[in-house]
Image 1 (cartoon, rainbow, N blue to C red):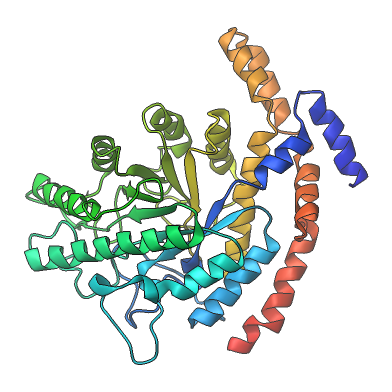
Image 2: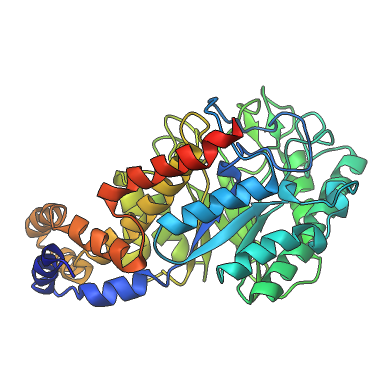
Length: 418
């Protein structure tokens, strides 16, 4: 142990925080790492552009072009980030044998075996996402809410196939699979009918969830969004819709909140404790919205820290499924990936090192100005020394070593893809 860690450990002990217990707990909290950062959300089942309410910006070289390159990059991220992880895979990342192809309504567990092999290698679980975008059967911007029954039937079949694949992931890894349902369905301008698409969407999700699965192992979620590219005026899966649907089907699914999918003045940190009052479990997609759902890489910033604080303060580390969701093609993709993962781990560690019980008591006792002062004092406790010790124990680079490791990987591996 470093002398800096020993000194910081004593400071925290005076506040009733056992840093050794915190470090032991943190390394067991899984964070789901999204595969789509490595190739700009392209996937392997189509050659067309990214469409359907999302967009990747930037032209930094060396993106992953094959399953092998993508998995190589993922393994690098795993090697330089501490803590427990899961994989998070989109359905468009199905891996077909040479000469084989099936459309999304026909995908099977065998098309994801290589992802299971990777997960088993690192003793990880896998989370999953049906891909309701970047496909010719997105008709007039609609999928599960489409008035065209053939279109809707195709996407319902896709969702059911994803339930079966999620169960395969859970059985193979022995770890529950969170399966997130999100579509970009909506309209660019003011619709004539707001309720009709939502009733079709409701029916579609109910049909998907009629596929048999064990809710202890397959955890479907419904994710909302305030608006997207090309659907600025109306989004079918709004916040009210997703929460109401999850509440009505609490025995079959849960709500998922993406902190980029709300109005810029809303904060998910305040929504987390509200939902935990009613739902046994919830899920998060953790991103960094800049003015809108821009999906910038997660940083160790104020809202990221506040979200983590609420999870820890609510004693909900085992009730909240945490997944990263961002994509930046303007910088080294491994750096973007790893900084985001490490930032969320930092936020959790920071939250676990705050003397929350003491602060809660001050609030309940009405000692609000003392609370105000001590909350500010907690911000300058020697957190970074605990973080560096956590990294050292995990055998990954500390903050001072981090850039050199990334730079070496770019020169020795990524540059050869040019």
